[in-house]
Length: 499
Image (tube, rainbow, N blue to C red):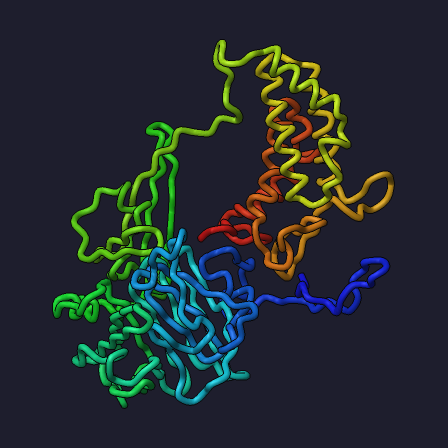
């Protein structure tokens, strides 16, 4: 994998000039011992590391909704999605004000001693990510973000934590609580109002509270920042409940599922655990997919998020049930719903064009796959209508194309196009050639390769031997593992496109 930018292209040949710059994952700690995860709500951390303040290039955010955050070379900028989401023209979005500054709306977490940091993916689970910031060889701090949670957990390993806001006390920043190792800070900038509650362990001291750079001295280095679920000044009960749970540190969220075929449903559970894998009581966040399919009591609190209303419940986890009715390989024809002579003519006309016409010279996995998808649907339709000769012709074409992709050599020579290569640095398969930055940004593998898997599945319906262990079955499975690998896969991450 390389950066997309090069010196330029030769104007006569179009051949790129210059030496591409290799890209390497930004990982450390436990994450460096596991297959590289990407495509998640925090994928920019493993892919890009920290974002340089003021630099719009390679800019990215992580989205532990209802919080959004930008991992930077000074720490992290945190904002609340709910207060920023609004209708702008025909769009519904959060137009982040001054997005590349250290802080604008919301607050930033920085360090008193170190001002230029490198960030890496330190650890992750099904519902959490832990970021590590270092200065040279010195690890300065870590932060754990939990999807759907109001809490972010920090460990300061050098220096002191500094809370930065755009302004000192006044019309855009102030405090609303200061008791029992907790400090409540509100910000109201660019129309976005947020209420943050910062809680440390016993002996925590907050200095320069009225300024825009509050320094925190913690005896343990542990600190929790909560985005309170309110758009108006919080009640005392809300403050106290969030403060009491704040230092119940969530290390991981384990999501398990089980398919119940007898009841045609999928049972899903989310469990919040500490560093010893023991259940931890916290403020869990259930988004609409969760609470609409669960037997839940009235939520303790709720707040709008990017995915709808998040309901907050105190507990160690939650579970819900999703309906599952199976998947048909293709839609069946219904009696008298088609003009058979017209459909047959369309299929015959398509075949008469010849393979070169329908395949139109595309060599990348995306556009080739879309073409193969069309043929796969025609195979299914031809079979449904008992057009055996047409079905078999289409199958022959599709087999030839997929066989080319699933092998590294053609005509006694190594392929230059239409093959896959495994990259052990990024723990992924790359299709040669790429499109839409599927190499450069390590994105879209689930549907680029999904087109080829769908087409291969159609072949398998009619020729099981072609998909056997001795032919192309292992290659098809390899493509699936790239974007839907199991937990114990040593070549690919678990469920790459999880968001």
